[in-house]
Length: 278
Image (spheres, rainbow, N blue to C red):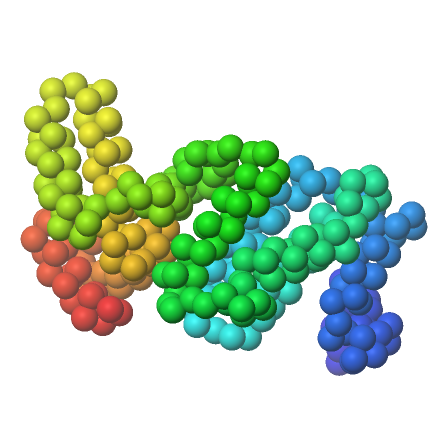
């Protein structure tokens, strides 16, 4: 019997085009992207714009986060590469349009990192991470002042950020500006207050309003616990999904119609699923 032929296009071998040393450099990535987007390159790549790539940039960012959550270095390495492609693409598009070059991107970020770490690159001193953050914000404020910019802590947050991340960033900023509880007890008291107000609502509009206030305060509690609300909820979603799938499997193994089970029986399966999958 003849081996089955693969109908997919022949794959180019990277090592037939670049040496192993070249494949390990950022400049090779830049050169590859430039060739893909050059006349005679890839039609799809030639069509891309900053706007059309936004979706891909967001997807790649979330895939990096998922790889971190999985704790898999091999997947993280791959996903970071995919994210770097987005940087190279945007820089190439900008360079072609005469907007800026990749060197401008690197020059700006390298300069920013040096300026904002005077405890490393100059003679300043920072006792701990919290002092580093405070110095960082002071340097940012000074940079804005030198540019003639006046910006409130609640301004300049990307409007397309997920709501939980937006809330936490805004709370971080106003906290650094001095609008902050003295300790976590203030946050806990505020949660009790918001729950009381939620129970007292009489209209759907009031309920939505108070739910928002309660959720906003829960984000603040997450901050005070040293966590990130977006991460906390994403991980909770993943746990719930695993447990629910386990519940369905347990019911199937016992010959039960999961959807028809009474709630108390589903709760028993839920507890068993928690023991099995965490």
